[in-house]
Image (cartoon, rainbow, N blue to C red; front, side):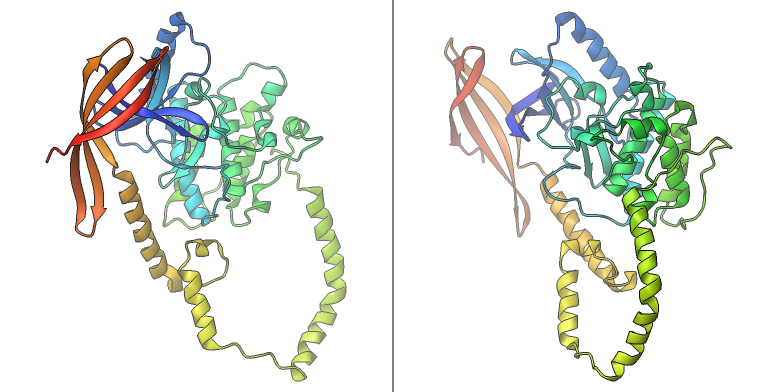
Length: 433
């Protein structure tokens, strides 16, 4: 008897997958068909390698790298599956709402912790598939790159320049090492915190700046980023692999900065006297600073005089207190008010944030409850052309009284077309209760 109960095909972001239930633990898994050619003699080694990688996950530990199960043979093809985890792609059509810096640091910690665990076991994570990076309430996560290599990639559009960012040793035709994992982890961290790549482009390619170690300081995009973390991220992207910090150093420092009671400023990152990676700011930024420095030196005295004399002759129009208060409550009632700077102090908006978190928790609870569960399935009749399946379903509906269970008994009629089965009809025969 199979360990998996497959519940039917679905399509998401142009990717075909099956939602399956594990008969061992009752949890839901997502299985996708292997898109690359897989010969019979390569199934066993791949399965064993995925098992070895998945054994790194310890019970109850929040991980940012999801390991795969399989390959499983089903419907004349091989499938890879992993625990179902819904998240939003970093490259979706809707812009990502910027969180407070400390929350974004916390989002990154599960992924950093996974890299540390894998490096301690001596296993290389590999180059991430950017289309498989997503974020949910538990933080940033991705599918094991070893499994992602065999699957169809979702129809999301990461930056081409981002995909061209590779460790310097790859551009030098050197064999990849474990230090490449630290480069990619630093690249993921940099992009998640800033939304930009850390290298300027020359004719659309970052290669020359990667090899030269000319890295844009992340604090230019996130001024509140602690300098210790900024220096460490820069060192993770160093062209010389030996200059990059270890995964243990990264995880240890990140753990300190992620603590709620930690005051930014300490601890700091020290590269033990090694040569710092060169930081190169964007030339346009430098030109803008020098340009505005000259303009402000001229206009400064004029602005002071203007602000001193003009109020004596002009009076500003009065703003209605009621209109101001109405605007305040309108903004507090929106989920996007977190992105607005200087709207109110933390003391003023704490109760609004608490209420919003409770609303989101209720929404997550509703979405996490399955719409239905398959309690039993059996084949009633099978011929060379058709097959009839009967299934008992448990439906879950939300009402004012809470969760309501409704049971049903259904019959599915499939017609065989070549090696595929197409659903011809579905009928609810009777209610069990």
